[in-house]
Length: 110
Image 1 (tube, one colour):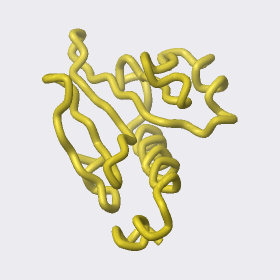
Image 2 (tube, helix red, strand yellow):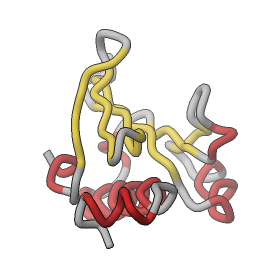
Image 3 (tube, helix red, strand yellow):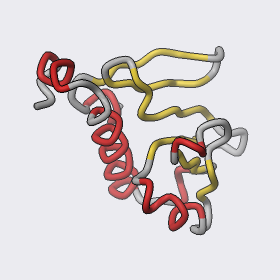
């Protein structure tokens, strides 16, 4: 719900099970249910903070996306709702800044 509240965000399901949230056609978060009852979510972090996050308990480099500085939280119950929202908003911002200025302006992100 929160991801869709971010400006110009869209949602679709990929790989039959993952909820993918995008801005301008580029993913900024991937979420799916965890077998343990929680949810897991992957998202982009600032390049210079990547190692700091991956050293933190509950955070690991995101499979297939770690080289792009994405992390995975294996159970979202291990972080506060406010922190998770801030991390997702930052991911949205980082990904949207990779879009062209024209694309950002067309989506109202400028």
